[in-house]
Image (cartoon, rainbow, N blue to C red; front, side, top):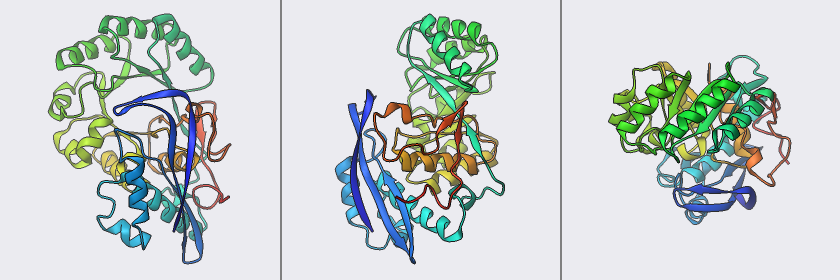
Length: 334
């Protein structure tokens, strides 16, 4: 197994729990599995995974990739595990002569998966115009960032969006910004504008708080909460109607697929998204979405956040959907 470092400039700086970053740095992971090549990507993100240095150190420790995946070598290095596990999955799918999504369990050909658009924290008119532009481009769902301003202003923004876009599925993403009282008022107000669900209304540590918020017309989705507590705790607490799966943060497409299937079996909806990764990991997330039955429009339109990419025209977004690669494995080897 060998690794190749890369750096991808962001089109705009990204605010994370660990500070602002202006590039995505990571490693391509290449291996040979019984004569078949496999390619993976390990792209750590501060606040969600290990650091870049810890990721590199974990990758350096790998002797036998398959054995490492079965042990605890990556206990504190989910991005490193993602890179190795994806390379192994890629090689296995290639050896089987099938696309990765079929190797992950899909039993029919899937040409595309629906994708949501994301709208930032603008004024009501700006937010409505951005949402209308997304609808005109064919996106079936629009996620609006909320929580950075007073609740009354966020409600005005949704009113403006719904007026411009009467039929699109609307979602809100609070990134844990609210206390319970504010979240309750938000859910009540957002129901008037037919918001499908609110992502992470409370901080990630408030699992029981999310349980208490459920039951109304606006669903509860967990993102950071799933990452912090794991799928077992989320299901046991009945804390979500929707889970948001980030394969890089969960330690691999294999683990993400397991969490997604368990959630679906428990009656939850699933959204797949990326941590603004390069083309290799982003394509794998598209394969994952294709492999999970009934997955909702997902956060896979993240190429636009990068000034450059590992590979271009991989799983492109067309008319509100991500095109699923149909070759052997994840993407064609370079």
